[in-house]
Length: 49
Image (cartoon, rainbow, N blue to C red; front, side, top):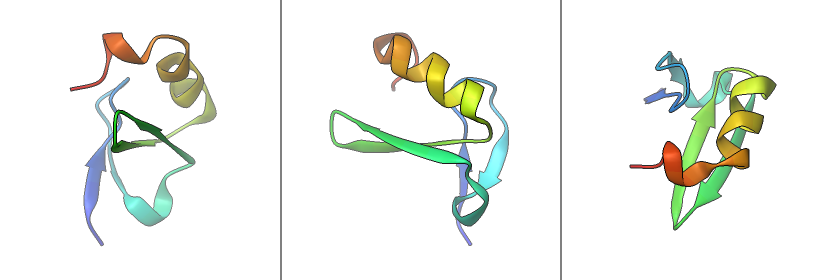
C-alpha cells in the first residue's frame, strides 16, 4: 500500500485507510479524519502543493 500525507495534520496514512479524499487541480489528497478533509475543502489553496 502506498503511503500518503494528510495535507492538514501531516499524518502518514495508507491510501486504503484514508477517511476521505478530495481532488484539487488534478491532484488527489487523502485525509486521516473528516475534520481534516473539511478544513482542506474550506481553503484548499492554503494547503495544496
